[in-house]
Image (cartoon, rainbow, N blue to C red; front, side, top):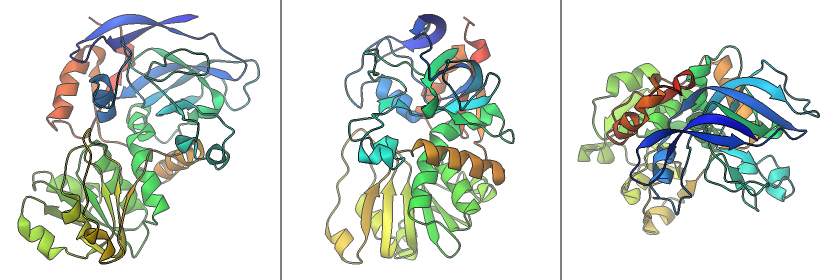
Length: 349
């Protein structure tokens, strides 16, 4: 086993502590990655605090990983030492079911293996990117184009693909009217990507305090959802609404903003169930849908798209000893727009 430094939480309450974890010795198709940067995702907080189910502690979160290949297994063909690579929300799948064969490993019928908090095919709990190194089979590693800085690339491995996938699937393009609910870590990427796809983009946020940011990121319009007039003014306006918030919202009110055959797709994942009145759907043949990250092929497509369109995440880089502070700021929506851990500081106390 390979011993590496990491930051782990040992309970729902935290805090993070410097620790040592074990990575498996390289199998023939494995890649050892020296992690340079790891993004902080709201999912890390939900998971570590037990909001999405039981947790096996200690837990090392992190599924927005950017780094450099430092060693490869004997049969690896896709990567070489020195390559710039990334790892996202999953590190394996069965590879045999119909969804895996379609390149939709995130929907593996036998369950994909999460980058942290899952049990891998070797019977070990996976640990994530708040660490100095990770071992991943080459089929679940993606190449980061030279045009994207590694620190700004890290959040693309979750926030980027989580928003790119539904925008692509539901056809964001010139002539399409797309609304993005929330301008946070996910929302700011949705705005950038939808704009690059040529759609007319509207941000729906609680207030107008981030309006200037939203317009600079590529939004054409920006409205405050705290103003009841917003929902009257925009009724029936959108072909696609991407809801990025991980909190309770009134789904029926947002469905009223959809045009005929429009879709509201949820990518935020609140801990509690959301309710919907069926009459909000049947009146204009509207759809309420969900989307979860993307497959490996689509993730690489997203990275190449971002490189072509000069897209990267807006980030604040922090040292590893500030993870607890960063988590509290995420919960307070006090980040524009993604925290990224500089893993070279992992040994700092």
